[in-house]
Length: 59
Image (cartoon, rainbow, N blue to C red):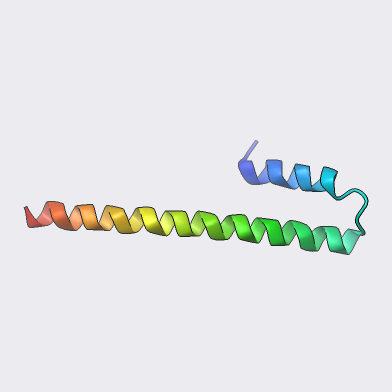
C-alpha cells in the first residue's frame, strides 16, 4: 500500500464524524501539503545531483 493511500485510509477513519464535503476538503488539504513536501524534496535532490554532474564534468 502506498504512503498516500495510507493517509487516505487514516483520514477516512479520523473524519467519520465530519460532514462529507468538509471531509473531502480536509483530505485534499493534507494530500496537497504532502505533495508540496514531496516536490520540494525532489527539487532539492535534483539540484544537488545537477551540481555533482557539473563538478564531475569540470574535472
